[in-house]
Image (cartoon, rainbow, N blue to C red; front, side, top):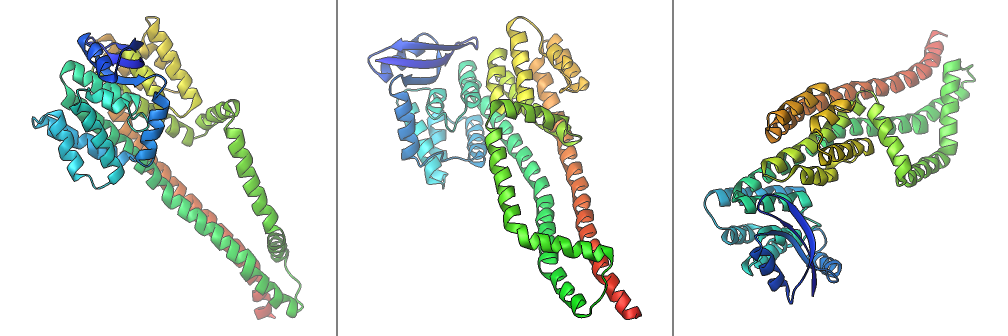
Length: 403
C-alpha cells in the first residue's frame, strides 16, 4: 500500500514524502522508528474518499472557532496539570455537549490509543484542524513542550475570535442605522409625501420648487422601485461574479488598501493576524520557512499575500524578514524596525510576538474610533433626509397658515 505522509524531524524540519507499507500501523511505526513526528499519514488513493466519509459521518464541519478555543484551553489546562494525552481527551470528550464535536474528539482519542501521534490524529481532519494547528502540535511533541504548544494555540484562537467579535460589533450599529435610514426614507417617500400631495392638490395650491422636487422623487420611487430593486440585485450578482475573477479581485484588494482610514485599518488587521501566526509558530519552534508558508492561509488580501510571498522568497535565499517588510508601504516603519531588531538579535519570535500584541491593542482602538466616526455620519444623514422632507412639506403649510 502507498502512503503519503507529512512529518517533522527532531530539529524542526518538515518532511513530505511517500512510503510503501503493508498497513497504516506499519507505516506509522516505520516513521516513528526514524525519529519522525507524524503530522499526517494517509493512504494515497483513499485519502479524499476517507475525508469525505468522515465529514459526512460527523455532519459536515462540526466545529466552530468557539469550539476550538474551548478545546485548546482545556487541553492546555489538563496537560499543564500533569495529565497524559489520552486521559485529557477522555475528560474533554465526556463533558462536550455538542455531538458533532464530541465525535471528532472521540475519533482523535481512538487514533492516539491505537498508537498514533496527536498531530497525526489532527492531520486526519484538515477541514477542522488547519496546518498551523497540526504543525504546532507536532513541534510540541518533538520538543516535549506539548502543553506550551496548546497554550499558544489557545491564545492564538482566542485573539482571532476577539478581533472577529470587535469587527462584527463595530459593524452592527452602523448597519442598524443604515437599515433604519432606508426604512425611514421608504416610509416618507412611499406613504407620507403622497398623502401631503393629495392634500395640497385638493387645495389648488402653487407648490414651492423644493416641494415639487420632493413630489417628483416620490413619484419616481413609487413607480420604478421594482426596477431599482432588480438593478441592485443585478449589480450585486455582477459584483459577486467579478469578484470571483482573480484579476478583478487583486485590483479591488489594491483599491481597498488605498481607501482612506478603512484601507489602513484593513491592512493593519490582516498584518496583525499574520504576525500572530508567526509568533505562535516560531515560539513553538516551527521553522521560519514553514511558518511563513502556513501563515498565507491568514491573508485575505492579494496585495498583502504578495508581500508574504516576497518575505518567503527572501528568507529562502538567505535574506531578512525585516528588510522586506521595511521596503513595503503596507507595513509601518516602527513594525518593520522592531522585527528587524529582533531578527538581528536572534529573538525574532519574541519580537514578532511583541509587535503582534501591540498591533492588536492599537487595532482595537482604531476599530472603536472608526465605529464612532460612522455613527454620527449616519445619524447626520438620517437627519438631513427628515429635515429636507419636513422643510418641503411644511413650507406650503406655513403659506396656508399665513394666508
